[in-house]
Length: 203
Image (cartoon, rainbow, N blue to C red):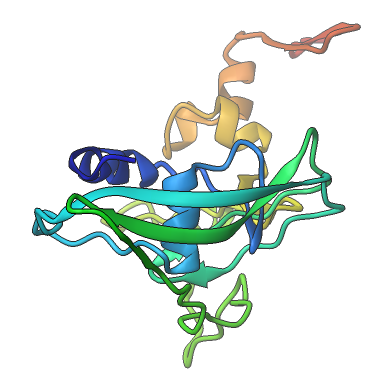
């Protein structure tokens, strides 16, 4: 890698194309891997003019059963399940000088953090105003909707959708789904195999 291109590449690294620790997936960005292992640390100033290139030697490995996430050198890698294709790890990294000669770089693996909990305990409880409790307190200026958040196997948040989140048009009673159904509106529910219609029948 030529040193004038490294700063441009680092901006693309922020996209998080990095899966694994020490052993990475084959689609992990190499510059992100070098930053994660501590071989390369970007700075605001350009590299010294005596540097011509940065050489990295990698070893191709078979796919792993899983790839763990870890924070190193201000770069957090992502976790992933069983890999497809191959994996790799960095065997060596060195600086090539313009006048000739190389400088071997050493990895910096000391800046690590233990597995962080998904939920952190707090000193006080936070009160949430649910829709049922807010029905008698519409004059409140601030309303907090109750939302359930789930986490997938990669420890990334997923929102648990409900009818009220998807179909309610607002926080006032006339905008609730149940109120709109009483006014004659129809709710269509569809899957890949079947569809249903929810409508109020007047006797």
